[in-house]
Image (cartoon, rainbow, N blue to C red):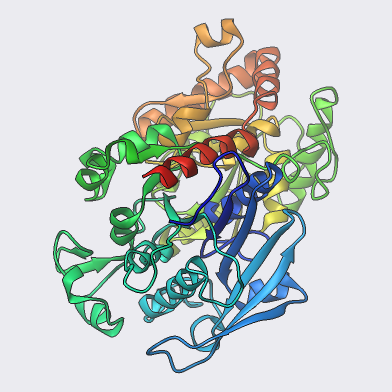
Length: 502
């Protein structure tokens, strides 16, 4: 194990398949852009590594080739490029492999939304390069104390580092599961193409019901494993949300934990946000209304300051509860509860069927529903949705952590969430008791079905319409919550030291 003084700063190699500001398909990118910054601010030497996708290279600006690598069985030469991610003051390594990463689409799928057929080879290559850096065999003369791997795309790194035949000084490994549903499962043919040891093809290895799983490799061969909220860590140890891995995770005992994600308040702050038309804070909360008018115009909706505007930003999938929203949308749009019109805006991408259903509803209700579903999240528009909406919809069937509900709190946009995972850990229901104590921050419903969501929507509409002072107190209380990355970084420091001690 790499030597370190536990009271001194740690050297951390943070391995990921996406990170802001380089490339984003989901919350992993937010975490990978922000957590290293928080750790760096606490005095640690954190270096980020991810693939050199075309978009990532465009965002990286000037880069320097710091290593040229030849991997066994790989014909093309691999270049390790270095950029400076100025907003987190950290080294950033981009793995340049033209045949593997220089292509259109997003990091995982082509333009048609289909997974790249060579994803096993693509991310196995990434894992091999990460492993070389971890063993100080890439010519950088730098070895981390900790390799922090994220999701299945880096799941073979712990496996590769478990082979100590040529080196004894191996860093400790922390493996973070951001969403257990994504398991990196591929067939026997892919296993053979990657030339992985046959000794791993069994239930005690990475074989999984006749296939094999990158994620399983990350879980089995890491010193410590965590997921992104305490409640989700408990949920995935049970069959309902364990996705077949519940027994394996439960057996980890104290090696498995949940650490709540944070958000970057420099990036998500309505008082200074450059992407919104009218900045505001708790003292100038009335300025939020002007952002509603801008948002309505952007989505082609009639301008109406009195309308109750619901917003949604994220992947358009059933997991995120878009199916539930669609099931209650006619009731919501035609309701007799509010005195004023209800409007809903959607921004995101995902399931083609659900995307089309949203477009259909928008055509049926052109003055009430605005839809922008593309192949990627429009970050600037996401900020404007948070600033301009009165209420944020997040009825996820399950949610490892969630970040958009945290953005909503900071922007005074009251979240409506299902009581699961990180949503349960971050939003306090507007029950009478919680309102009386002044601790409520949103509306939380128990059962992930249309009845549960509709009940929460009715509560929200009634308060917005008939108790506007209570509504404003609820929104302002949300703005005062603290979910900074510094708090999360403290927990990761503890986890790193635990991994080193294992």
